[in-house]
Image 1 (cartoon, rainbow, N blue to C red):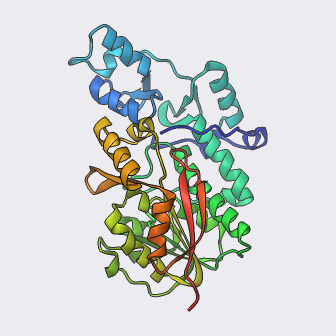
Image 2 (tube, rainbow, N blue to C red):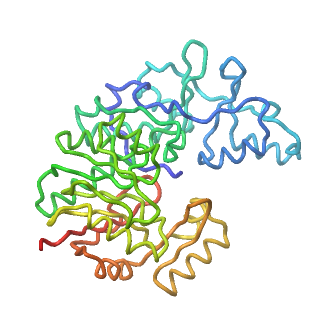
Image 3 (cartoon, rainbow, N blue to C red):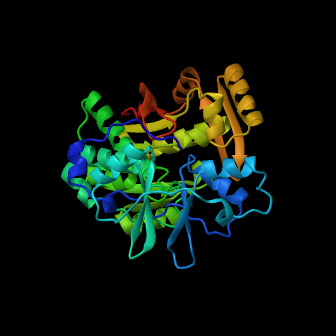
Length: 376
């Protein structure tokens, strides 16, 4: 995942400790891990070094892309383990050290990650993106940031091991919603639907930004819905493959749908637009996100093969919409604004505004469609 370019403010660092921003779920390797498996994990982590731990959980060494490249050059890949090639030294800190000190070390060394050790054992990693995510959270939520619920479900597929990118997605969703409400002179919503809620990536930030709002959560992943209801006190609604089968026992003033339509084929858009229309009260707002054009290298970073990326872009160019399946129940769509607007015109919703790149999770930015359900 690509990191952001946001500057880190001195004020937030001076009062922050590493424990507030570190990524406890950062990947780990053992000396026995194969180099091939480790290389795949390095790629998923954007080539950031990964710690190598012994059976007691102590930090033995770190594996970097440079170590793998050296092994390839020496033709030491076949049947080679991580323990045989890991030679990268990474600075370590305790969790109570200051974020300012950790950032200064990263900047002076050129490394984008430090390892966090407590009682002689590795407990977490801290990346520049983690620090930037912490800084952005403090800037957007102010004193409320201290009340952020950071409990994570082990089944949360949106959390890839680093807190920073995860926090960026959530807090920039709040930024996006606030900016749109302000743009159109809307007050804070008294009720919000988060669909799909996953395991609370955006919900945990919405809950702090709008503490008095009634929040409903909806997802096809029943475990995610249960987690959000239990941990965040949200009202649970289990979704369905067929959106016509989903019902709501109340209507919401605002529905937020981040990164749902970006994964839907064209034939599924009408049903989900209808479902969102059923979820909001007359005059209410629906905010949903979509992908416009994405460059081939971005598509490959998202996990598509070269062939899949070429097909997606060819369909996008010809039909103004493209979609490819890229795994079990997972796909990726690209849609031109004109095509998206046509879908909204055929739905019960009315387009208010097309906000280009209004939601800014680390990678990639997404367009936001602002719609309303007309009062009958």
